[in-house]
Image (cartoon, rainbow over the protein chains, first blue to last red):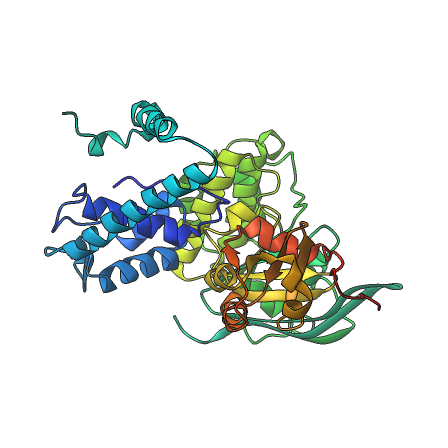
Length: 136
Length: 303
């Protein structure tokens, strides 16, 4: 499991970790039933307080994304809440709408916006980590 | 997690001549928690730390560390705390191993096996002369010396200051892996706010000799936010809730509030259009320790 922490960011570290694990579960990079590193292991690896990791695992378990089995460890839930994925996708669509509206307000034309989206699609910066890239 | 208190400070005052450094500091740290003490230079961090470890006698107030008074139980206290000073002086001509044996002799509970284990884990070379150690390794040695008697409370005065970014992360990892892992209570001061957030359970901001805010790291980030709204609402809104920073940007005004959920309720009730902005720890700290109060328009700011 790869997690990247941006220190000094306005997004609290607990939220950064939770969002990345959530995204990896929902995108299938972490497969249902897969075992996550222990709280202690992940805390050591990321050099982050164990209580922070524990709270993240507990929160994601409450969302039914993870399953914490006493004495066994933490696993990706076997039955992922797929409505959660649907919600995330819907939020994403809303975000795009909002961005386009903002673009029009700034005076960009439809063509300008299309070019910008195409450029962004081709930009190396928008490539996700290798595990998530699908070539078609 | 227990609710047992490892460290408690009540209304602590300390002056150097006419300079009043600590003006009524109160703190309570539960066992097993890591507290980061933040403050600008001269805020009183080192004075507070030296009072806690019994090196300074406060003028007024009470300190209990592991239920001991640092002034009357100084020797007993030494067995329970590990202390790494800001300007740790070590004998440069000794080797690492010699210094460990020398310091260990002062402690009844010194654990030679643990010291040897740290020596290995912290990758220190026993035959190296102290004066030849890098800053990072000197601090690691200081940590080892502060920890090998298995103290319940560990107090570190700005340990990461002299470290480069890679070593700071290593230092954080040492704290998480070697101290938090065994349930130590830790109090450490720092200037490096981005390094503090991943590690600290709670944060105390010391400003002008007083604790300006003491909260868990999470709560601090949830509570202290910037709110932006049209300047025309400033005078009526600002009287409603406590703010720690006000900036007039012309058409818009921004405030930093101490209790964002409460402020949000009021702004919604008053139907003020507003935006909430998350702050990083640097910005939160800055809001507490700098005086940024622009004058409020459409209102006389007399007094």
